[in-house]
Image (cartoon, rainbow, N blue to C red; front, side):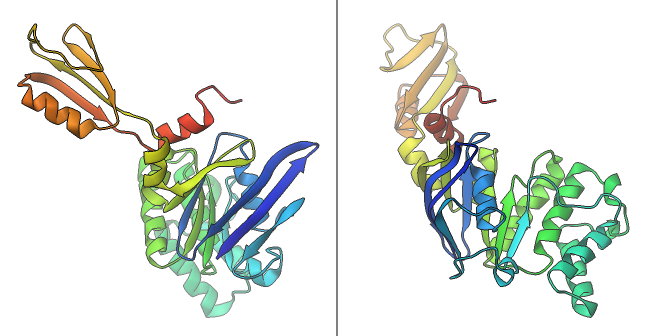
Length: 296
């Protein structure tokens, strides 16, 4: 569905995207993760044809020019900066974007009704968008991207600044789109979102792809050790647990095999008052690959 081949883009001598290549299959949810300034939005803008790469090529559904009208009509784009008109109603915003995609008459009305229902805004369709909450605006932003039923959807930070209920609804919407076979490119700073929604993830930093694979494989390869923390009621003077750190009755252990360690603890007959196991996850992968220092 989507192929990026050795994309390179620079601005005023600063390389924003450097030799980036990937392929996205039809119906796949593909995550682009990276720190601020990593190049994610630049890649999205090249995929949609807003920016042309200095080098390399983007192919969308067999076409080598995403800026062509017939190609853009197959793409839905929900940008990080909301593409909405504050003084218009939700209905009027959808009608405007529907007209841009060539919809009119009953077909346009049907698509508006479907889009509003899909994001849970049917009862607010006559509301002025400038009065909407951040979560409602994000949901409407998604509806505008879907008004023409595109087979490819680009979502750039779709849950920034939204309330938990809207965030949950956006997740459900994306999962429904996935079941319909829509191909989705998803950028986010929230690792738990990518871990839940994405089939594969590319982790990008300083314009380069550091790792690209399924979420499970990335966690296995780069996630590091699981951490077991807890507290016991009493410790026998003869008890030893190689690799663990004890401070009084509290202990910490880093391990690649948490289940085996837990079984060993259970067989030792210890009386636990608290036990916590924190496995490796996509966030630990991200930090291990991109570092833990602050980015401005």
